[in-house]
Amino acid sequence: MLRGLTTVSFYADDLTQARRWYTAFLGFEPYFVTPAYIEFRIGDYQHELGFIDRRYAPAGAPAGPAGEVVFWHVDDVASTARLLSLGAKEYEPITERGDGFVTASVVDPFGNILGVMYNAHYLEVLGKTGGA
Image 1: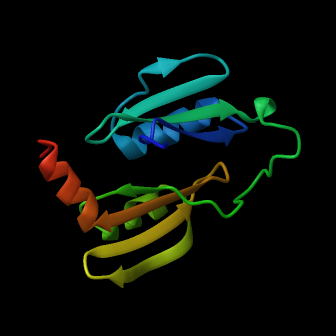
Image 2: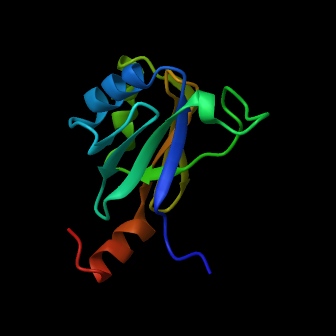
């Protein structure tokens, strides 16, 4: 039934600042920009990371971390140090989860949890689908 990740959407009170911060982190500009929404395409499968002006959040939506964590595969989880140097706050430290799995997560300056993971399964699937 679920076929794949399409878009992860975060909220931000200040989209201009979110755009600047994520552009500095990712190293490139978003491909889609409106006054209420910006979107980056990232990674091997060009998944979408979007930011919505918090004014459009559903009624009752929390303004800070709510517990859900989406993990993005990275080649080196220790790279979270770069996120911290850009102003993110540690949510969960680098944690070994088992053979081939390491995670960490931070809270970005806009209150969203950003997870990173070295994931052996991701690399296995990427290899089978012709990725790098």
